[in-house]
Image 1 (tube, rainbow, N blue to C red):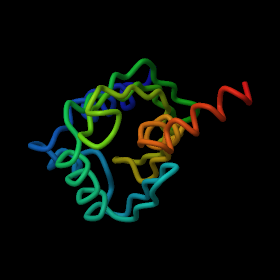
Image 2: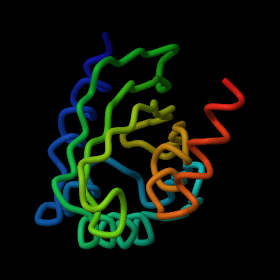
Image 3: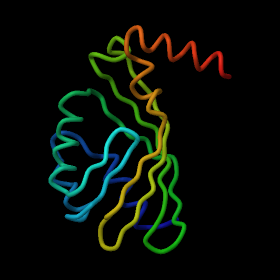
Length: 140
């Protein structure tokens, strides 16, 4: 197990709206952060993204279930995200599993998240969510 990844995972999991200055210790100034819904370049924009995330959602928790370093300076985190959003799922807790591919030197300069965007967002929107759940059921 990579000591760097373990330390990163612990610090990342402890993020909240009150300690976003921690991002400067985790990410380089020129970081590229990607997920199925966003592509963010630079630490300043990443901080703004997380500030908005923590301002709009509640009870955000990342539970890290594993870390794997595949080569020096590159590895993966497996995680479960739990959160509540007043406009999704009637404010009930949403749980999402995913993983992150990280590349780093002293700090992370590339962060790519992989998760099901439908399970995160679309399935929890009134009307649209029902249609997506029906379609997924038909395809299964």
